[in-house]
Length: 67
Image 1 (spheres, one colour):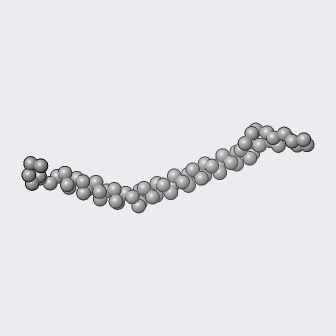
Image 2 (cartoon, helix red, strand yellow):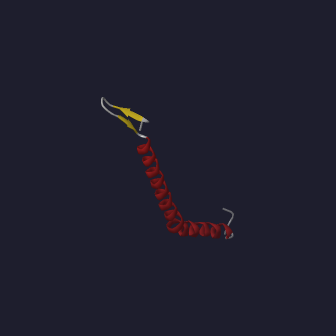
Image 3 (tube, rainbow, N blue to C red):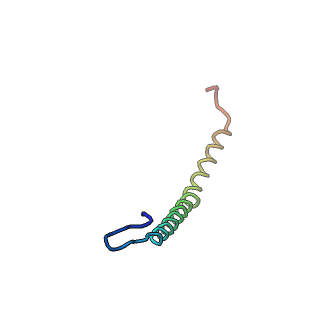
């Protein structure tokens, strides 16, 4: 928002509104980051770990022929 809004009869100073909006945005960003972190570390980590383990096991196996 602008720093101030001028109307015919009033001058509205928007610093309090801007501060509140910034605080709300920071809280929303924190909430989103917490949810993304929870999703990645708790839900995706076991799947990623299992896939990496499978790739490692596949690479460790000896080749059956020259192909």
